[in-house]
Image: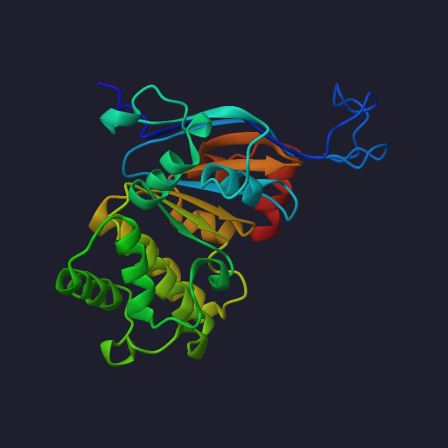
Length: 278
């Protein structure tokens, strides 16, 4: 029996700018930019499936559209066009989640999705205590039991290796690696079936990167969460992802099993990426 995807993205497009006669057919673009009107076609007809318990890697250089795509999926950005379907949630069955009300989208963010941003400032309140950050997400998901929230928060902080004697401290006092781990704990607090990770190791020291990647792999194993991991670093994708999508100038140029893409890249750009890793 073929497993149903947990998340289906169809023809997701996002442009910044109104477009003009020159770029309407996408023929006269420089990469994904129209020199005539300044419109950027950040995502162009992106389609993929995410399966239960899978880590899907999305790799591409800076400006390839991968982070914009992630922000669209998490409703931080309005899409220009496209559809997304979350399966295994009866009340969302068959509904294009991009077309739902802002209240319904907020509910999806609170119950179905977790997000870990490249910059922890986007995902954390830096002046709240670490335990307060996690409690905030639990409150948003409807939890009102203080004792229970404290228990869940402590458990998650332990899970991401934040010492409990520091749980009342604000993340602004923590190192970059610790901030990312608090952000991961917060993202996991509502027990989401789908977790988005956007460039989570960028700017961290190599040893810290390795710890964060280990943590992500362990979480995936322990919780069985489906993850979409965005990175410009193929080494990160190689360590984490079961399948990989390669993006360039807002489009998907190649996709397949990660091993297959690393061992036998088809597109010239992917070949360049892989050979720079060797």
